[in-house]
Image (cartoon, rainbow, N blue to C red; front, side, top):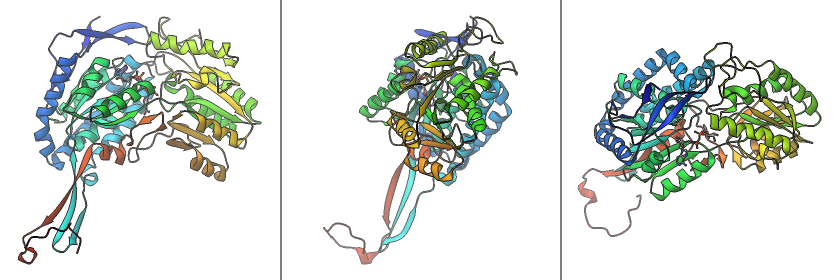
Length: 498
Ligand code: NAD
């Protein structure tokens, strides 16, 4: 092992000796490629203290100065996106074209943050009362923590960091320990773009680092993305410690296919959204709900497309789907294939043991398709987060809608149909935060906001876009009167608007 990955605190690579560290794999070869330092409580304190020291100057920096850094960062990120894509592929495993897609969506969020001057305008009411003007201003919260998952090591940090710093906050980012290098690359680019030291700090580690941020009195807010049990824990612990928290959790996304849909388009979408990034996307389609009588035909079309997918090392341009992120995750996902079989689902395509274009020791699982999946089976109830797609069959639209709405998750969903009335009814009735109409992965553009419902999000504010600016600011309202002798005199009555 040659490479050591460490924190970025106060604009510098951390020079200390870690008490603990973790292994970072190359999922395509199964080998350990780096060690990553795990922060102890004292490194958490160091990072928060650097962010606190940087705060006064950064919150007072002009909007022009703050957005100039964001514009410069956007240019650097665009120029060096190829390097970042390779870093993502080497630690996460996703194919490079997919990593490039992640970066493109990240850039959207940087571009949105470049509009901070527009977003941070307050309101002004002249003569709210006689001689009194009232106006509002949006101010930063202070030091904020961002805690991100392994599956989008660049995009998810960039859902939050640009908006947070545009608003005048300073940040401690705790990326996933499974693929930590993208966060360091981003922090280094921000430094090159002119971001002052300490405004963005990267702290690597696990639960110890997360708990340290959740309990630190100087951290005012937490933006978290990860699995539902941890999201719930982060929300409860963070709010119990008096912080503002948005905690985005896991998902089980249903794609409803009505009998009038174009089944070739629906099958293309199910395969793309089910197996892209090996199913390790919170917006992946994991359940196709086939409304009678199209089940047999749709399953045959999906299976046919799967047989032509090329699985291999993500750095090879011919690969369409890469390996899973770690051996432990591979084992967990594979155990669901066994569970699906023993619970009586029909295994239409078995991805275990498929031939791949890559090293035998990689964490491979080919695309897997189950049919006749029932709601009580664990392959339906659990978020598998791998290339395992289930098809559930229902007799009609009402049963399809009921299935989606009964599910505890509510991140994304899609409907495939040629009937505008049915689609309109579905978008109105479905209890899910992000809906696609003939669009399988409806990740909102950067000028809307991203967030699921129910167990897919804890807190009341979605990520990025207008709600991101709302999350990272607090409003102050000023009621002002300039001296006017006609309003002198004592008055104990409650202030009225006259
Ligand atoms: P995870 O919950 O294991 O980890 C997320 C973060 O929490 C990481 O930084 C990790 O270090 C930290 N963490 C892990 N265990 C912890 C603990 N016990 N206490 C405190 N912190 C802990 O998630 P993951 O496996 O990295 O990512 C995949 C999950 O994220 C999936 O469930 C996926 O659906 C979800 N996700 C959701 C969204 C969304 O927008 N809703 C987006 C991407 C991923």
